[in-house]
Image (cartoon, rainbow, N blue to C red; front, side, top):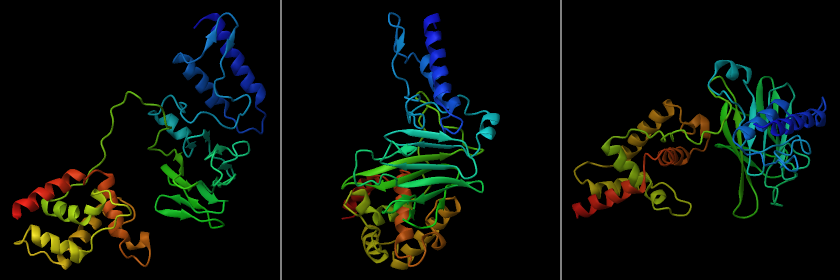
Length: 325
C-alpha cells in the first residue's frame, strides 16, 4: 500500500468516527473491517492524480446499513471470536444488510422504507409495507414481530400481524414476505451461536453436498410412487393417497403384497426415523390438528430438498414398470 493510499484510508476511518454519534447503531468495527477487507482485495478505486477514492459502503451518509455481502468477521473458527459474538445478529437481503450485537431491548426493523428501517426489503415493491416487522432482543433471545398487515413466513410457521413475537433459534433462519404477484422477498437472518461462526465470504471452499437420507430399496420405490407428482413438477402437487399408491405398487410388484395399511406403516417408520434425526415438521405436536397430509407433505419435502429423491428415480421406476408389462 502506497503512502497516498494509506492516507486515504486514515481519512475514511476518521470520517466514520466523526459521522457516528454515541447513539448511532453504526458499528465502527464492522466498518473498519469492510474498509480493510476491500483494501486488501484491491477494490478501492484510487486515483493518484486527484487523491480521491470511490464510495465504499456509504457509511458516512447512511451509517445504519451496509453491503449485504461484506465480510462480517475475519476469524470465524476461533473460539474467542465465537464466544465474544454469541447471539450477534447478522441480516442480509437483496437490498442491503445489517449486523449488531445483542443488547436487552435492542430493536432492528425491516421493510420497504430504506430511509427509516435498519434492513431494506422489497424497496421497489409497493405491496411490501414501509415497515414489515422488527427483530427484538429480549431475555437473551432474538424474537420476530410482525408490524405489517400480511403474514410473514418463518420456516413452517407464520408470524401473524398483531400476534405474539416468535423466537429465532441460533443459526440461520429465513423470513419470507409476499409482495406483488409472483414476488416473494427474503430476509436471511443468522443468530451466532457457539457452533456458528460469523458469516464470511468463502468463494474458494469446497461445496458441501446436501445430506441425503438412507432408504431401503423398498422404501425408495414407495416414496417415488408417493411423490411422483412432485418429481413431475406438477403445479401444486400433492402426495398420492395410501390406497392409490398401494394399487400402483401392486402393479409394479405383484408378489410384494402391497396394501394401503402397509404403505401407511412404512411411511410412519421413515417419518419417525427422520424426526428422531432432527427434521422438523414430522410430528403431530409440530403441525397441530387437524393433521391431514401435513406430515406426509413435510416428509416428502425433506426427501426432495435433500436430493434423496430425484427425477432420475422416477425414470428408473418407469423402466421397471415397462419391464413388468
